[in-house]
Length: 298
Length: 213
Image (cartoon, rainbow over all chains, first blue to last red; front, side, top):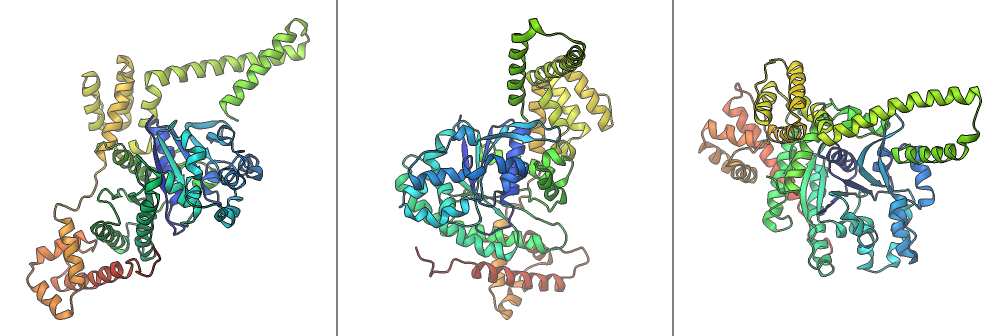
């Protein structure tokens, strides 16, 4: 199986990273019958508690053992305790009490990940970057898509995700605060690409492949103008070489939708919770563009 | 609980039952066993029907027809086209719910569920229209930034060289909303304001050179 490993990154918080990962992942699994693995690397564990009921998640990741924390803790202690099969959560539990989306798998995060950043520098580069790739990389080939949900920073965990990834996807909210962060992000990734290159022989070097706009509203000029400024910024970064010419701004833009927010409390992706909502429709169309881009269909 | 847990439980129950089957008696257990058997019959029927629909592609076809993509993109014309392409038949119904029912029935009759699902996936993919902004979009975006970098007099000169139609195209491509009643003067003011803002924002957001490499 030729898997696509994609890191969803943005060091700005609240841009829709988790919503994008969860809903694109679910749509790929449900409507396109793709086998998808979501790897939650954020100590806030948002994609984990979106897809799992909190009691079940707490029990599953108790002491961090069956979570992505264990991967990094193992690297620090030099003891391989992480067990991929044990940590894996398959499908999501619906109101029936039984699972749906059997093709959607999750490696949950736990809050213990917070402790990792303080201690990770006991290790040296490139060992830090290679942690995720070494521990779970061999399992990635069992999936069509591996979506890495990164924390809102560019510290060690995110760098390890970028190292493992074929490409980066940047969720983005159309406003100036995001725009200013985007250019810094592009430079940081370009820098990492150079730094990682010697350790990635024969592999694709990570770059920004797509930008996804969330929280879009049709009313007035505000968002259209902000998206235009983003497009201008992308083309400028492409001219300077910080972004490759393949980087695209994916359409449709995901409109603000209450049902998406509500679906987090139901611990279900929006296509299961409210399939008729504009949020579900936008994610369906976006997922199609996503497949076109990463499978080179159009 | 997941289906794998349920199967382990049923296996365990089966083993226990097999081990003690020769010794079990009594009305209470008999009543309970009768109820379980009825539930098992219903479950077996549902499971077989599900597995058959998965194999034939019917499950995916129904999932697609109920999907958010269908809600947005599915039309009677799409179903007519699909039926003609997949089974070579004409769809008679003209309203969507009836057309959907007729489509499913005929596809089922010809056993072409997989083909129909494939058709719908492609049709939904093609139905979404990506706004390209036209061939000259990039050029007009660059022009917009350039206009934003000009001093007042230079800007007035540049605007003077353009027709109202050209200005409307610059505004439209760069996200400025206007109506048929918007005057040239008002449109010029909007372009001035937002072009300056874009030029300033893009330049200001540029990566500071002091970031350590």
